[in-house]
Image 1 (cartoon, rainbow over the protein chains, first blue to last red):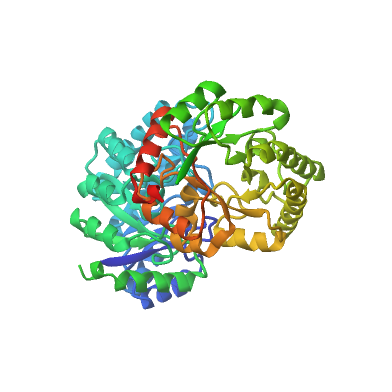
Image 2: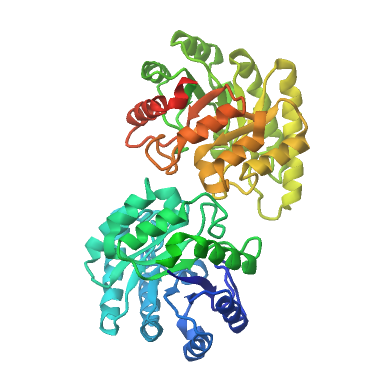
Length: 272
Length: 272
């Protein structure tokens, strides 16, 4: 099993981004802890030097399994389901602008909070139509570059659109693109999935990326999730991607990152 | 084990109140399903006919193990931690106004969302001081009537004050009243407690009331919580109170109420 951890390329508000700021020292620490990669949260590719990031990541022997896009929602309000067509267009353009860096690094582009929420006055099925159309457009733009997208089901408290994997699978069916899959997150699944392992199995090969945080959103091992059972189920679907830590920086980012990977490596599934 | 279920005495917005409106037919249905009691959500005792409610409850052989007070927060904005002293005073008065009915029925008064949240511009420790002072005042008023209060730890998404049982125990220490305890809720514990059973054990005899909903807030049995282990742990603390269903009315209120009690009664712990 390969592990990565979320790293923001610029200061951000989102509590679950483990490290913040100071890219190179963070890459150095993450590599030293034994992580094989970093999941980079990038608000806007125009604001970062992609070439320099790529150089630093490679310098420290790290892969980039995924790019997180949620800061564009959290800090700029972009979303695929805003009633303002200009906002929707900007969200699509922003997503497409991640494709070149994703193509160079082999990263999956994550669609998390960027999908938006059903805003007041918007009909739920209208929001779904906008979401499907936006994803189709992004997938079509990504396909020639061999880039894949992964939509993350997120718990009811953070979005009103796509809370669980079954809803995610139905969305994939509507989008109908081979390069569109799901990102399963253990923290959200603990709240939303009736039986986590059954839901993972039902996704088969449609899981393109995987997030780990424990039941309390601390590092794996700090809560009550059965990671051995969950990760073995994930492996049984044929998943050979990276397992990426997205958890709160508690008691502090370094300690969380160190304890998280130590716990995951202690599991029998780690050898698979 | 005795089971009860949440019943609102008037129409309300809160999604987790299982039945709404139409008191007598609801009492009849709840009794017929085998519940021993109803946890009554009462926004304002002045708006209900306490004598009539008591008569109907007894007519159907039901107990009232607890009174829920959260609608006063949800629909009127009352809270113990609002920066406006008039709002705090009204929340205290409202709580005290539940005492007569609680005394007559033996119900615990639940302090859930009525505690409030840390509002913008308010210091967290100031909010805690207001909360402690308010609870001390309410407990002092309740004590001569033999009435007990139970504060419910509620997950991070719904309040910023007292999310887990450890914080609840520390609050009890500060309040220092023998008639102040905790209400443990399995849905919230699934998100907030590192190990649910350890947290329940740490509370010992300070659990005055207990809520069950499964991990997805559906009826017990619809998610992945291990209720047999949880309820046996609860019994091991000496708890002999009621286990009260507070879950979403899905697929509908009747079905949820029926399946919830059927599942709980199927557990070996039900016989204890």
